Every structure is written in C-alpha cells, then in structure tokens.
Length: 92
Image (tube, rainbow, N blue to C red; front, side, top):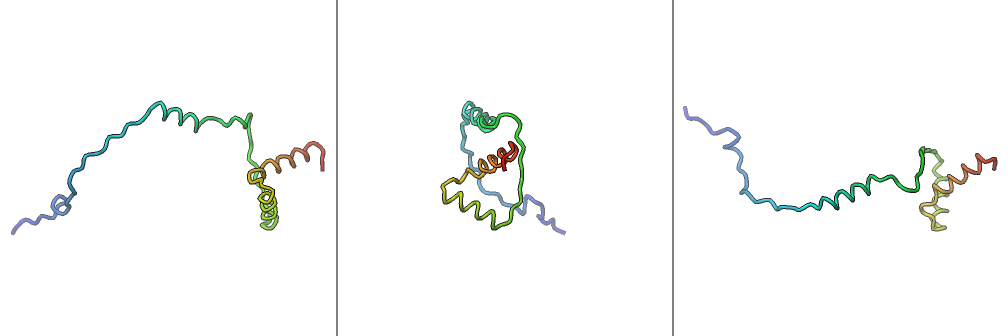
C-alpha cells in the first residue's frame, strides 16, 4: 500500500518569502505622546464624581436643541453644574 501525503506540509502551499520593511520608532516622541495621553486634565482639580440623570426623551431633545441653537454644544455640563450650585447654595 502506498503512503499518501495527507500531512499539513503536503496540503498547504505558502506564498514566497517577502522581506519585512524596517520601521524606525522615535522613542522620545512616543514617550512624550504617552505622557500627554495619561496626564491628568488641568481643569479637574481634586476628586470628581460622575452624576447620571435619566430624562424623558422630549425634555432631553428640547435641552439639546436649545444648546445647539445658542451655539453651546459643550455647555450642557456647565449648565447642569450651575443649577446644582445654585440649588445647594439655597437658591431655587
């Protein structure tokens, strides 16, 4: 009985070897970028706590639309923070 070539070597055909391109990594630039990514933001001094609030969809859309029409796309957090400050300081 003849031996059959059913092993992995006989059933696979790999492509030709291609030399890899050498890349040069600027270690100093990489270190600087890493420090920049992992640096603590300067505006957040002290410990911060995230507060999550569930709103009805209609109220959320009205709030976002008002922010967008005024051009304050990133001011929602500031508005909520100001409301909390005024409430805790005895305001209404």
